[in-house]
Image (cartoon, rainbow, N blue to C red; front, side, top):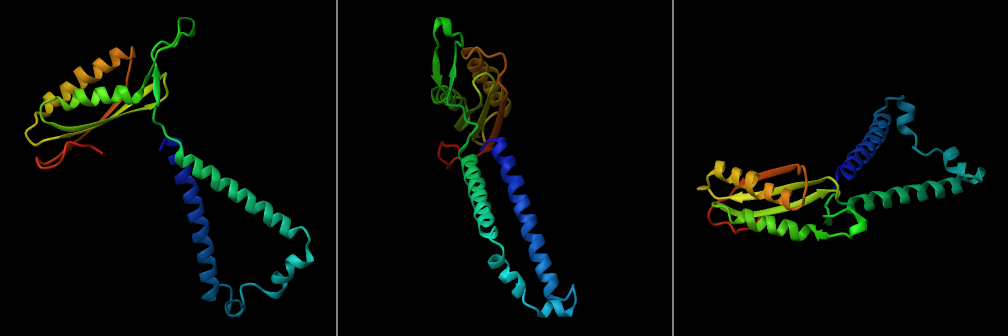
Length: 192
């Protein structure tokens, strides 16, 4: 999930949670007599409130419009969940006059994973390219065994594998996040 979708999730769910909390607290306070003992014993929907839709013709169209708006907001939220920051591919020669060379991000990350897995002590590696074609970012998850030399592993990832990848993609910079995870010798060579 990309940052924008995560922000929409946090904001939307916080607002819905606050509205539900405020509504529940108001109803609970009314039930315990915060607005007087008379209000606590009366029904929540009075007869005037129940008859309101019958005396106002605009009520049901407004309710229908509100339901449509809620449905559209729900659809937009679902679509935001499906959006990803994952990069499908890279254009190596962006100049259209000489043609374009595109390489899939899967091919690039598979080659990088193979190179990192060949390093001593590595049990598994998983790489993802994120962002856009002009400014990609690299996320690496590397599982290593207890006998791995972390200095050599870090140097192999940073100075060899990532530097080679950046050079082959002709990128000036490739921001990289590396997550290292210690695994026991019995675990399989996979990284989530």
